[in-house]
Length: 443
Ligand code: GAP
Image (cartoon, rainbow, N blue to C red):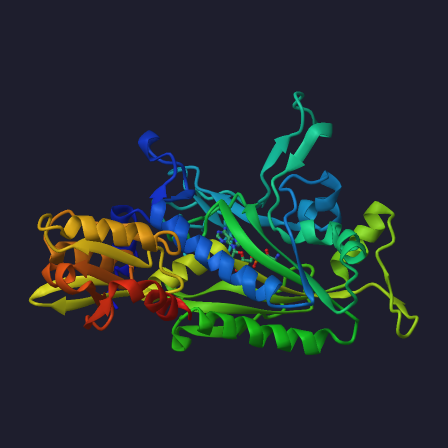
C-alpha cells in the first residue's frame, strides 16, 4: 500500500461525500469531522450491524440510550475528575503543545536541557502539568462552580447508573449485559490522523455483568466474539491483532485489558478494547450515591457486586478501518481505478441504476426500476456522463452493483448487472432484480 494512503483516503472522502471537516467554510474546527451522505450511511450500517449482533441476536443483552449530560458526581465516582488526565507540555517559543510522553521530546521538560521537537529551541518547554480531558459546561443560566456538568468522555457510565433500572425492568439475571451507542467527548491534547483521534466521537459499548470469579471466562468469550465480528465485517484478518495492556497501560479501573489493533498506515493502533473492569464502577457508584447496587443470586442466595467485562468500540475508528481496508487501486484499461471493496452489506449505496443512453425509452425503464428498488434498498440513479465514468464514480463510492438498462432491455426486459470487484457482467430479468439483490446483499 502506498505510504500516503491516508492523504488519498481523506481526499476521496471529501470528493465523494464520506467525510468533511467540521465548519469548513469558517476555516474548520480542530479535529472534529462531519459525515456526508455516503459516510453517514456507512457509519449507520456499521452501528446497525453492531446493534443487531449485540442486542437483537442475544437474549442476554439489553439496549440503552442514556443522556450525554449526567450528574457531576458520576464523574467523581468513576474516577474521571481526579484521574482522566494527560500530562501537557507547552513550548513557550513556538506555542506548540505536546503530551509529556511524546517520544519526540528529548530531555526533561521544564529543565534547560529539554529541546522542542518542532522549533528546535532548548529550554523553552514548560514542566508537565496535568490536563483533564473532560469538556466542562454549565447547566442552567449561571456560570458558577455549582452548575458545572461534563460532556461524557465514555458512554459506559450511562450504563452503570442505569444498571438497576435495566435489571429490574427487563427481568434479566446475571450474567447479562447492557449495550449502547452514543457520542463521547474528549479534549485530546494531540488529536489527529483524520477521524482516528478526535474530540467528539461515537462509541459502541457493552458492559457485561457477571459473578466475581466468572470474569476470566467471560473475558475470553468476549475477546473471541469481538474479533469474530470484525472478521464478519470483512476486515482482513492479517490486519488485526490483539495487544494486551502492560501494567503501565492499564486504566485505573481495569484488572486486564486487550486492545484490538488494526495496521493503520501510521502503524498498529487500537480501535476497540475488551476490559475487565472488576466491580470498580458499581462499587464506586454504590459508595457515592448511597444506593445499593449489589445482586442477590436467586439460585444460591449469595449477595455480590457484579464484575464487569466491557467491550468498547469506536464507531468512527471502526468506520475508518472499514474504509482503509476496502481501499484498492488498480489498473483498468490503461487507467487507474480506485475502488472501495466494502462487503455489500456495509456499502452506503447498494446498487446504481444507469440508462445506457438518455434516449430510446431507456431513461423511462431505468427510472421505473430505480423507483421499484428504492423501496427496499438504498439505490442511486445516475444518467450523467459516459457509462465508464458513471461506473468509476460508483467504484469510489463502494457500490457493489451497477445495473444498466440498454437497448436489449427494451426488447426482453433484462438488464446487465456489473459486479464492482470482479467486473463480471450478467443479464438478469428486471422482474427478478429485487430478489437477486436481496440474495447478494445478505451477507
Ligand atoms: N469505556 C472504555 C473506554 O472508553 P477507551 O479505550 O478510552 O475505553 C474505547 O475508548 C474506544 O473509543 C477506542 O478503542 C476508540 O475506538 C474510541 N475512542 C477513544 N478515544 C477516541 C478519540 N479521541 N477519537 C476517536 N475515537 C476514540
